[in-house]
Length: 321
Ligand SMILES: C[S@@+](CC[C@H](N)C(=O)[O-])C[C@H]1O[C@@H](n2cnc3c(N)ncnc32)[C@H](O)[C@@H]1O
Image (cartoon, rainbow, N blue to C red; front, top):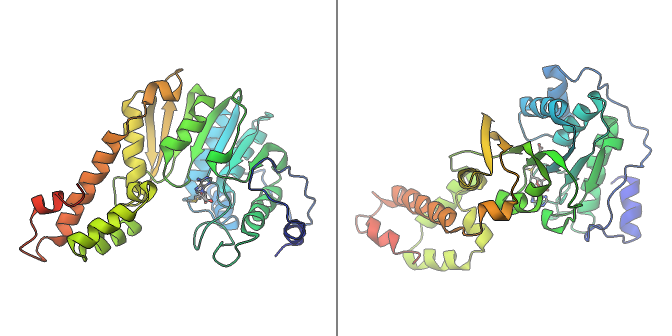
């Protein structure tokens, strides 16, 4: 474990309340990376590699280019792992010779897998601190410390200045994009870009595993499991991608944002309103929940039909009433 982290853990400092906004004052003797030529594919492939990036390298390149094109205001980057997106955005700001800031929000924790180096499963006490330090070292390696402000906490723990104006908001956290847009949409200027990852009309590996589990138990057991799940777990039952897809389309329908392009599973929207998020999107989520539920039931039906002639669609439909 790096020495700075040991010192912080030993002195029992806590970042949990998020009052501590980490300033990048660390002086390290790590080798600096040449960031002059940030235009080529090789640079972004290297950025992905050195920071354990989870997105394809061309997405980081696109983020850099969007930052070059937009950075008249600050940028809000949510769910950053070890930092590739934040570094790409910051380089765009630096290379366009502006003085804006990338506000980085991440809990810097994961239970057993994810983009971070340390997991709470193995390292419950100092996990957040250690992962924050990994992130800060990467930011330092790319020489963009002065352009990034880090909030090592969950999105619902951050208190951003309501007057802060951003023209890019990037979200790649846990799939609850309506929650995060609720917090940060109003900081975005009209015409600003919203970049959302994991947008796809598909059921990912975790969603498939959940479905399989449900398809192997009795209706009573399935009902008990369903009732025991948190609202968050129910919404993610078919995986993060499908939840993001349904939520983003629902928010788009409200007129808050317009789709500009999709690259892989990353979607780029433009903010098309000057109204407040809560005034335009509303809080009635029954539409979203109905879509999630009916897709879940139809996928479950596809899995169980053929296995037992006794199981019929109306029977399944009654399952979670
Ligand atoms: C899929 S990873 C992000 C990968 C990263 N964008 C990349 O390009 O490598 C999701 C990230 O969101 C963070 N995260 C998940 N839920 C969060 C929450 N509620 N608040 C803040 N960060 C969260 C995790 O710590 C993790 O770094």
